[in-house]
Image 1 (tube, rainbow, N blue to C red):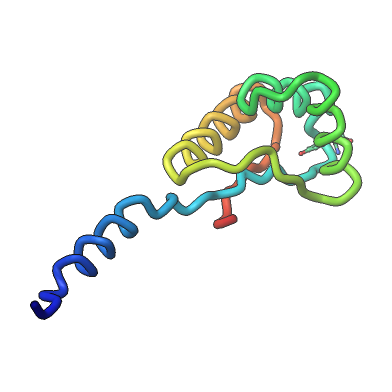
Image 2: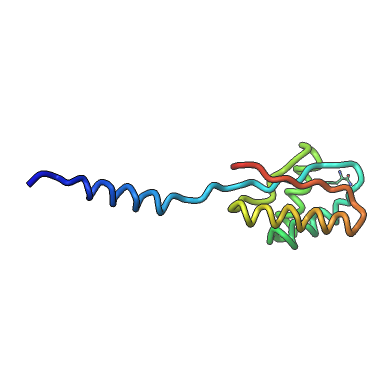
Length: 102
Ligand code: TYC
């Protein structure tokens, strides 16, 4: 009996359904004014980093100009960027935070 093609269609739909979501890096940018302690606090508070890892990431940003804080789905990354920018603004620091496709 000839193949009606339904199996392939179902298989295709199933594989499409489990495609992993696109991921986004949340990136912090260096500046000359934001205190190092504030950046470490941000990395602990919003990115669940322990103090040693947070300090390492902060220093990498300080020396290299930018650094990845974490990789998340689009909605989570976007919320983290907004939270960081709000906290920086509230504290009067010029800290900049962006997201980019991983
Ligand atoms: N460069 C800042 C200073 O010397 C520290 C800093 C690190 C600022 C990381 C922003 O994303 C940043 N106080």
